[in-house]
Amino acid sequence: MPLISFIVLTFFYPLLSFAESTVIPSLKDATLIEQISPELAAGSAEFIYIGRIQRGLWSRRGLVQFDLSSIPNNATIQSAILKLHVANGRAEALDLKVHRVTNSWGEGATNSIGGKGGFAAPNEATWVSRFSGTTLKWSALGGDFLSTISARQELSDAGGVSYDITDAGLVNDVIFWLNNPGQNHGWLLEDDTAYSAKALASREHPNATIRPQLIIQWTPQTSEDDSGDVPIPLGMLILLSGGLIYLNKRHTS
Image (cartoon, rainbow, N blue to C red; front, top):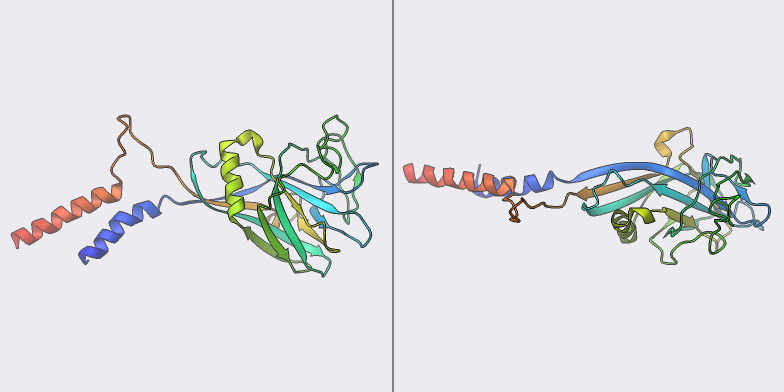
């Protein structure tokens, strides 16, 4: 093997091998239905509804949250992909916008068909309440979230298509949650402007392969030993050993 190939393989391969890809299923999800009284919900439905299911009806927004406890809090996050599946919807395109939620909320037990919702069960997220039947309300109707858009994606298909949504804003959110796990309240999904609607597969959907997922590519942080010195990477040790062997062969030949 040429010396240059030996150097590249021995030094860089150990570094690349540290990369990890973790697929995280949604911890909870819900639909916020724009109605004040009575409060409606669909926390246990097999779909998350976004947009307007019919012209003239109020908006629907989605909530989705992921448990990041499987990722070390000192990991270096390389990428974050929010995977959502459009099961069905209106033919018109929908401009999906993803925002970081800033308050806790409950998923609830209400099931419904067609996105119209049902009377909210206790502790369920609604347009008004973070936990229905309690004094815990959203500070603003329709959910508490950052106005900054973490990611956006045009959903142009009527159904049967999965989207991998990726943006630097999603990475920033993941990093923020790892550093502040108590503030991980997930994302809000919305498009209030268009007369379109999409039904996204929720975590209750019978087909587990199309439920929401968060795919995180990460590498562990380089650690230091007790002396405070950074240890020599394995690749460097192999490189040094190989170099000595190479020089020894040249000297003896």
